[in-house]
Image (cartoon, rainbow, N blue to C red):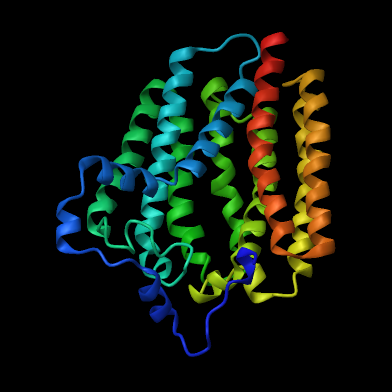
Length: 321
């Protein structure tokens, strides 16, 4: 049975399902938790997979903005600051969505809804991470990159996160804070907003649509339990989801060529980016035909592979140029 086929009995309320799925932690078990257990839970709250992709996207932007040489100090501070901001934003997202996470099977065992970490303890840690990330970027890298990091955090926490429960367009709006770190990587290297920066911004923006829509399709019934206004929840037929997936990936393929057009990347990059985008597009077309959980998972896996491979192509192209 695929993940998308998970359902509950009509007699079960979302709260009851959440309580049934959450393991009971005794006082003794809580007292026996080691500092490694606590650290592991805090690491989970930073959404390390997403934070990694965000940081890698900043690296891509930095390399596109560094045609001749790389300032290792600036690069290091940019990546550390971006990772801190991304992790802090992820933690604040967990805090805000505690009640909704408790209603979904996929998220009920996260540290905050499961009771292993309190929201009141996680909130200041998340805020501190964002502030420290911005604070080290501003004087060492440049104020523009720090401003982009702060705008990213504000948009994600105070705009995108609440909109996930009010409008099906939340994924489209969420592409802006999701793509700004890549633009921030470019401004860290150049100090301004250039064509190469907007190119990598567009790549990350269009990439996010099939990535998150495939996830939303796979867990659409779970998102419905949590009262999220995701497109596959509001329009369960799947046609609109497939159209947005394909349309966004077509635009991604076009955007991925622009670094070559703007001469911020060379032929080696293009030789990887073009077939990579076509393969990604094929998975979305396959989803449009099948509209199954397995097809959506193939789109998700392709999206996860896409960014690291594209960044590797940018890096290798930069080295041999």
